[in-house]
Length: 146
Picture 1 (cartoon, rainbow, N blue to C red):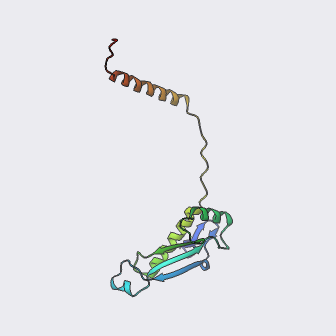
Picture 2: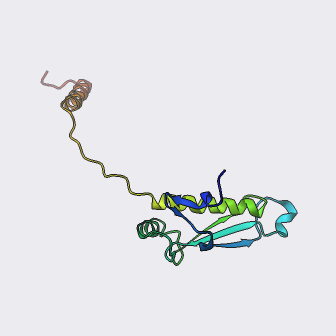
Picture 3: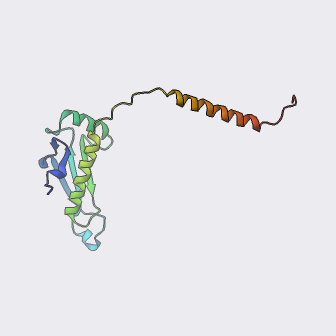
């Protein structure tokens, strides 16, 4: 069975410690009828990417670069208010935070090695160009020299 740490695992070898997450709860504008006006079901979770003592330096650099548009003073904040219960919104916000960090800390893909076209591919390209030129020549009106 998945434990609470599994929900905060960003990469193999790194799990966000629960103590580094800051939670805030407020009234939601989502579903819930009259209970929306009385319960704090909206969940907001914040994680200090820039100041986290446990985040490996390489992951921190990637996250700061890739999430720059979402960070406020180095802090990433995610909100959830879709569900009726605070518990479900809390879980959804945490999942979204972890997903954002997973995507942001993913290593860059290996660069593409440029390759030369094969002889057959070059031949196909040239013959295609010749066919196209022939079609265009046939569409021209007859010249006065003919």
